[in-house]
Length: 637
Image (cartoon, rainbow, N blue to C red):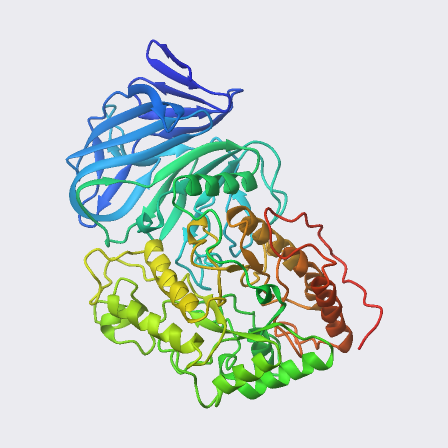
C-alpha cells in the first residue's frame, strides 16, 4: 500500500480511495480515486464525562506505521493530544486497501456521557476554539431505519438517529427498527422521492463492536452547515477505569447502500461480533401465513361514520398531536372477538397457520398473567387452536415494568419504575420463569412471541438501577441481554418456539428467528403519501442485507385504505411470510373487507403455500416492481 510523503503532507493511495494529511492540521482529506472529496475528516474526538467536558489541545503531528494486520497490509496513523478530561488521548486511523478504520483511545477515570467521533471540541494554536466537524463533500445520507417523515435517502444537512429510543411523538419516530444496523451511507446524488436510492458512488460508515460493548442508546448523525460528526450517548452508565477504546468506525467505498449493509454484516461476522447464521433451524410451521389481531382490534374500536383518527405507528397514545390509536383498541384483545374474526376468515377460505394474540391479553405487561375478563381460558383457547392445526404467538411488550417490583426496574430519581432492568439478576430470573409458564406444557403452552416496543429503552443520566450489578449493561447491550434471556428460555420451554422481533442489527441474529417489518408509516417530508408497497420493500431490503438467513414477518398495519392494502396483499409473499391484520374492515378508512377482498387473500395464500411464489426466506433483497393499480380478482367467495 503506497504512502507518498511530500513536504508537509502524506498521502495513502489505494484502488478505492485517497487519504491525504497536511502537516499542522488535525484533518485527513478522504477522496475517491478520481480526486473527488468525500470529506475532510476531523481527527478530533470528545469523550465527555458526565461532569466534565472533554476538550483537546496541544495536538501532535501524525505518526505513521506501515505493517500487517490479520494478513492485510495496513498503514496506521495516530494523532495524540492533551485533554481536559483524560490523562492521555489519541485518534488512530488504520488504512486498509478497501477501507479505513478509526478508534479513539483514552486513559484515565470517569463516567461517560456523550462520545463525539469524527469531530469534537478543541483549542487550536490558530486561536480557533469550540466544536470542529468533518466536512460534507457528499449530497445525501442513506438511513437504514424507517422514519416519519419517510425519507430513505435524505440531504446531508438532515440529521439521523439509529438506536433503541423512540416513539410516535415529534422527532422520535425512528424506532421502527430498534436497533437497526448501525451503518449509514453517504451518496453523491440526491434522491428523487421518499424511497429512491440514487445510483453512483457511496461511502459507508459503520460502527463495529461486540454487542456487549454497545453500551449506548443510539448513534446520531449530527450535521450543521456543511459539517457533521457522529455521537454515541453512553448516558452516564459506563465507568472508565484506566483505559477505554471507542467502538470502531469503518469507512468504506461501496457501490450502493445495500452493499454497505452487506459488508457491514460481513465485518461483524468476521470479528465474531455477529453470528454467521440463525441460532435455530426453522420449523416448518414458521413460514405459515399469519393472522395478527391488532388491526382488527383497532378497526373494531372505530366508531362507524366517525372520521378516522390518524393511525398510530407504535400502538399507543402519543403525547403530541392527540391520540395516535383509537381508544379501546387494546381492550378488544378478547377471546370471543378473536373467535369471531377467525371464524369470518375461515368462512372465506382464509385459514392462517399462526395466530398472534396482540395487545393486551395481560393483566400487567411485566407479569404476563392473562386477563381473565378478556381471556377466561387462554390455555384452553390455545389448545383449541393446536387441535385445529394452528400455532399461537403472544404479543410481548419489551421494557414495560408494569407489575414488577422496584429492584427489577430502572427507576426515575423519585423511585418510580420506568423500565424493566436487564442488569438486575432478579429480573432476568423473573423473565426466565415467566417464559417457561407461557410456553411450557404445564402453562399456557403458547408457541412463541411477537416482541414489540424494543425502542422503549430507558435513557437518561438521572435514572437509577437499584437491583443492577456493578457491571450491568446499558443501551443496546442491555436490550440484547434481555432478548437473549427470553430467547434461551423460549427454546428451553419449547425447542421449536418462534421469536419475532424488529431488531435487524446483525449482532441480534442470535436472539430472534424472524424479523418483522413493523408498522407502516405515512408521508414524505413534502406531505405526499408514500405507498405501503414501497415502504415495506425498502425495509425488506435492509433486512435481506443485514440478516439474510432470517425469516421475515411482513406486517400490515396501519394501512391507509384498500387501494394500498390490495397490492400489498399480493406483494407480501415476495417479501416474506404473509401477515393479515384485518378481518372485517380497515381501521384507517373504515372500508369493509368484502368477500372479494378476502378471496384475494385466500388465493395469494394458496399460491404461496403451493410454492408458486418465491420462497419466504433466503439471501439478498427482492427485486420489487411498484404496483400502483389494485389487482383484479376474477371470482368472489
